[in-house]
Image 1 (cartoon, helix red, strand yellow):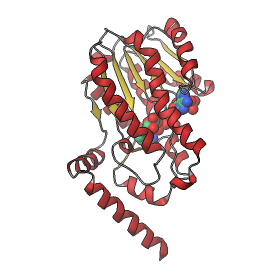
Image 2 (cartoon, rainbow, N blue to C red):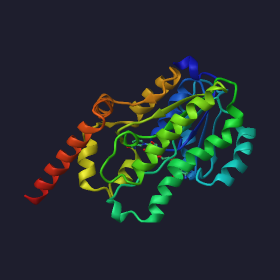
Image 3 (cartoon, helix red, strand yellow):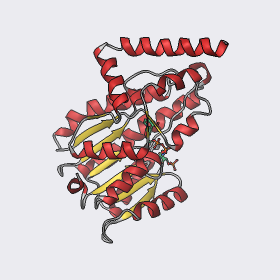
Image 4 (cartoon, helix red, strand yellow):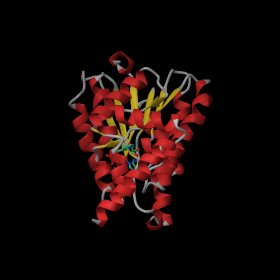
Length: 276
Ligand SMILES: NC(=O)c1ccc[n+]([C@@H]2O[C@H](COP(=O)([O-])OP(=O)(O)OC[C@H]3O[C@@H](n4cnc5c(N)ncnc54)[C@H](OP(=O)(O)O)[C@@H]3O)[C@@H](O)[C@H]2O)c1
């Protein structure tokens, strides 16, 4: 696996925190050049310092670029400058994303729109702008979706919808990019211990929390390790964690029936217990 990354240039959106940051550290430890992209410059700078500690040699470039992936024009204007400065990528890990969980009737249009903008249009914008630089060099694009992009979850009408869209986007893009020798993966982790999850807990309905626990809880280090291994093997659908894999397996092979029964049961028990 290390050989696959050695000497390659890896761009990671959302590389300043959580899963993206752990992917960046691992890539650096495998001898890759790493460019992390996010908005907050202070976070990017300190993440870069952290990632640099994992370098295998001094020739490796670890750099950052501040960019909001939601703005199509801004992304298209800045990517040629970023590529000119840091080199073009052989691997793109599109990890930038935000979550929000609440009852549907509490999610106003602005919140719903903000989630769609980063999790769907953000993906589209960064891939569209980087594609010309990734053709015909056996490149790989990894799209970070979620297990909530394969199985519907209580409280996730905004987030889950955006993550289902990410899976659909990856499915449609895969055959198109094959003709340029670009492979695609879509990553669907269950709950992962990151700042995103802690922020989500502020508004998340209790019913959704109980249902999500069923599919497992992972560290970002574990998720990054599985991702990089499966990317190197050119797997398309990557589901880190045994419980998450089983959740999807039963969902898929029962046409969604088993996950609906389990979810409804957990929500019923939860409601009964809170009345006691
Ligand atoms: N944690 C989980 O339980 C979980 C489970 C399944 C899937 N995922 C997915 O995994 C991905 C990474 O999540 P995480 O948990 O690692 O979250 P995180 O620690 O909050 O990291 C999110 C990253 O995305 C960047 N970002 C957010 N909005 C952006 C924008 N508009 N433009 C550019 N960068 C932006 C953030 O930096 P700035 O804020 O500085 O821009 C940060 O670097 C997300 O797509 C998430 O949906 C997470």
